[in-house]
Length: 160
Image (cartoon, one colour):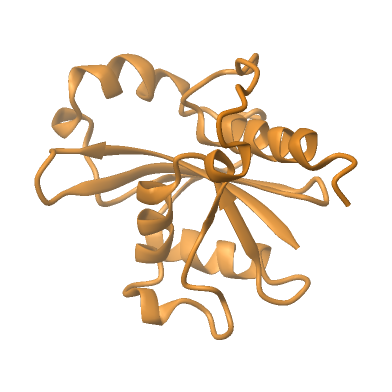
């Protein structure tokens, strides 16, 4: 099964990339969204993150619990992404997203048994083709993950 991943994060440009939120959209329509309760602090975020990411941390249904410690997010994602064998994970400009995803489990070698140690990238699939502008809320990890899933479908329609 394919899973489409996006994260929102804070970075200092040197050694730190801190997960703020993560969204995953499965090809079967299921979604997962969480905001990390630990590992980052709003006061350490740069102005761009404060203006463009932090205001959009609410889930689609505000009654759903969505703020979890990173260890709980890892457990949730291991279950969410293991329904049909090892996941095939896709992102968009996904290098930092993949690092943050893997770090939820510890080191890359700590990923669940049988999972790939790489992420596929929609940008590589798209090449020079322009993708449509995202109509949903940009910089919300779940909205971005759903957009990635939808663009993957658009690019691969008829290619099978």
